Image (cartoon, rainbow, N blue to C red):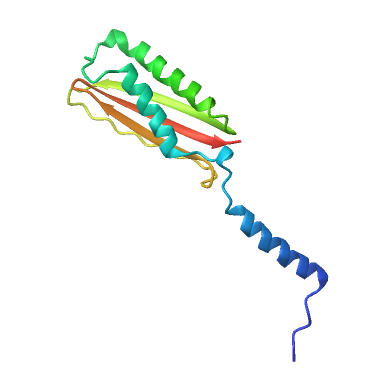
Length: 135
């Protein structure tokens, strides 16, 4: 016994599913976090703020942190993408102490993303984290 032919509703549902699958793989560059692009921006800002021969001085850390975070957000916002950015910067002295950090999020892996940039000098580490969330 043969199966009955599909109803018009079933045909439309199959067609809609076929098209939605094709469009779901499309990445809109205006809504997609580009890790390489962000990392280049962060690297430029950190390296222009904290020179390789800069010594760790506790009195400078607050200012360096503010400059790095503010300039990174400004440069990322200037990309005019439909993305909200979260930027953190941690600067600490090289003195043998360790650091362990973990983050996790629930997001759209096609458009959202994150990156970490680490900058070392003779006396300190600078770690900048950027998260980009499509809106």
